[in-house]
Length: 241
Image (tube, rainbow, N blue to C red; front, side):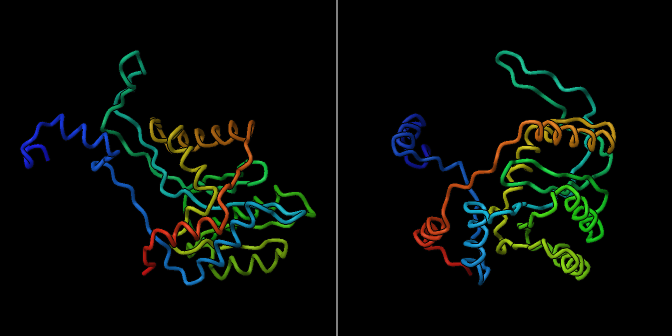
C-alpha cells in the first residue's frame, strides 16, 4: 500500500493504527441455513441457562482423527527471549477418536478413546455415560447432526433408554455445542505441542489430561441469551442462503 500511494511504510502503519485497521487478519464465519435454527437455538441455550430440575445436561461430541505424531527430534524448551521449538517433520503412529460428554452443570468430562468412529462405538460410549449418570436423573444431551448420531441403531437405543433426550444443534452451528470448547483447550494444552511415540502413548496422554481436568472442574457458563444472539445476526444482515 505504501508503494501504491507513494507514502512511507511508517505512514501507512500509523494510519492503520489510528483507525484500528488490521487488514492482514481474517476471521471466518458461516451463518446457519437450518430452517429450524431459531427453535434449536432457543432450545439449547435454554438448557444451558435454565436447565430442567433433576436433569443432567450433557454436551456430547467426538474429536476424530487425533494423530499420534512423533517428532523426529526432542523439542527445545522455552527460554528467556526464545519460544519453545519443535521439528517440522514427524512420524505418524496412527489416529484415535475421543468421544466426550461434558457435564454442563459441574464441568466434568466423561471421555473414551476408540479406534473407529461409527454408530457401534457411539452406542458403546452412550452405555458408558449411562453407567456414570446416577439413577433418577434425566439426561438432556446436546449433539450435532453427524449421521452417526441419527443412525437407526442409535434411535433404537434411545427408545430403550427413555430418560435420554437428544437436542440437535442447527446445521453449521457447532459453536452451540459446549464440548467443542473443551476440545479446543485439550488441543492447545496437550496435543498440538506433544510428541507421542505410539498410539497408546497418545491415548494415555489424553486420559491423563481428562483425569487432571476432572480433579478441578469448572461449570460451563453460557452468558448470551438466545434473543441477543438473534439480534446480532439480524444486525449483521447476512443472508442465510
